[in-house]
Length: 332
Image 1: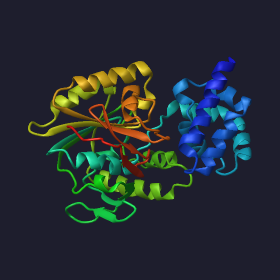
Image 2 (image 1 turned 60 degrees about the vertical axis):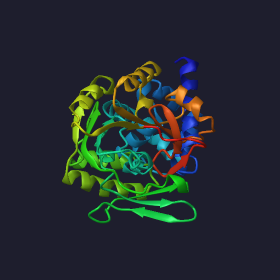
Image 3 (image 1 turned 180 degrees about the horizontal axis):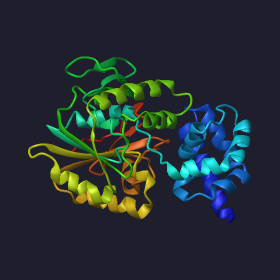
Image 4 (image 1 turned 120 degrees about the horizontal axis):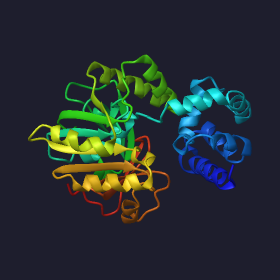
C-alpha cells in the first residue's frame, strides 16, 4: 500500500479529531487519534474506496455491528477481528446524518426571506430539516433566552442554539411546499432506518438522539416528498415543479462535502445559473473555496452559512451555534 495513501487517511483522521471531535466527543477523538497512528488499521481502511474511509461512517458502522463503545484498545481488537463484516457494512451504507438541529442555523435566513417559501433540500436523507416551521427553538444570546414556537403551540422537538443578538429570528417562515432529493432517500417510518440515524449520532450525544426521535415522529406524521437522484441532475426538475408564487429556496447542509472538487464546482455553477432561486449553503470551509475566501475569518471547524455564494455566518456543524460574520448582510 503506497505510504501516500496511508498518510492521507491518517491526516483525515487527525483533522476529524482536531476540528470536529475535540470538545464534542472524547470517545471519537480518542478513536480517531489512535487510528491515525495505527499502520495496520490504516492499511485496512485503504482497502475501501476513498469516500468510504471517513471516520463518521466507519465509527457508526462499527457501533451498529456491536463494537464496544469506550477506550480504543478493545475497539481496535474488535475492528481487526470483524474487518470483513465492517468493510461490507461500510460499503453498503452512507453517512446520512439527518440533524434536525441544523434548522436552528437555517432559520435566521429563512425567517428573513419574503414568502411563502418552497423548500428544496439537496441531500435530504430522511428529510428532517424540511420542517423548520414545525419545531420549537431556544436561542441563547448570552444575555437572553429567546424562544420561538409553531403557531399551534410548542413542538416536541426543541432545537437549542447559541447566537448573536441581532441574528435571532423573529418568526417562523411560511412554507407551502417542501421536497428533497437524495441518492438514497431514507424512510423515516422504517424502524431500521431510524436505528441507523440514531447510530450516526456520536456516542455522548444523547440529547441529539432524543431530538432525532421527536423530529422523526413529526416527519412520520406527515412524510416528506423525497425523490431519488443526483443533486446535479435532479435539483432543476424540482425547481421547475415548485408552485407558482412561492419563493424557491434550495439548501443543503454538510452534503456537498462528499462530492469531489470538480462536482462541487459544478454544483455551485448550477446553483448560480438557476433564476429566481435562493441558494443557501451550509458547508465546511474546504467545500467552496471562493466562499471561504470571502469570509476572511478563522472558521475553526465550523460550517460557513452562505446565501447565493455570499457568506453570512459561521454555524456549528450540528446546528448548535450561529455567529454572524462582521459586516455580513443578507441580500436575497
